[in-house]
Length: 141
Length: 196
Image 1 (tube, each protein chain N blue to C red):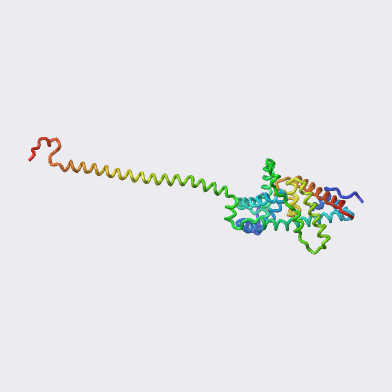
Image 2 (cartoon, rainbow over the protein chains, first blue to last red; image 1 turned 45 degrees about the vertical axis):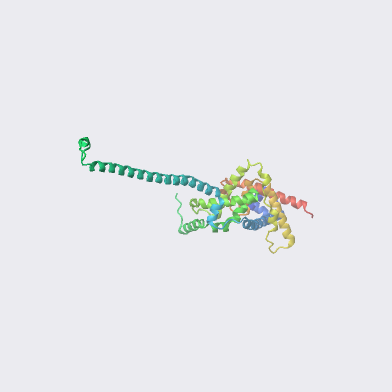
């Protein structure tokens, strides 16, 4: 019988990579077969233990079930940064708009009173019976 | 040559893509799978929880890029592997990290092994072997552990591992050879050390 399986041949068989000579040897050699069987059982046990452990660990991690909660909960920094940016833009904008409205209202009032004053002045001039240049010549009754 | 999908393949792709829209279901179905790859690769329970959350968030945000070409689990594991790789790169600069990390306690793992129908003696032996496997894996690099978990825990085929990790087939095989050699050596040492 040939020498026992080399580590690479042993690994290839475990990985399911087809190789005729190592497979033939495995059938003929009880020692290699026992070792292969032990290895397969061990890896199977590890797989079962890993699955069981991760199920339990995943339960303990307790990822939030809700999609919205997940999004907000995972990256609060992004949410807070966006909110801060929005506030930085909207608050000064709102203040400016209120101030601007007040300013505009004051301007309109002033303009109306100026117009009224002008109209009153025109009215008084038009209302005079004697023209202004002839008023010194006018004889008072 | 352009690859044309058959009707059934197209329907499978559609189903897979719609699966990603339901993030609640996605988390419930796959979180244990993602968590064990991350936890065993990084050997840090706390960081694994954080990376697992990042993985689902990234999957949800980038779901438009998924075309249903592979199983959803493979796609998630691919994202998880990339996140693991990023964390390992960042770790190299975190000298204080070792002090606060919480290693994966696989003694918990061995104790939670399904008992099945085997005798208590063979259960004890199986637990001992599980400890030996984990002890051997802890001596490996995170990348080697990832490849080992993908092959022997997730039972992915070599081409799937190549696709998920972006490594060459030769590199994947080399990592697997090293991991298996380490595990075999540890089991052999355990046999020599145990009473006859």
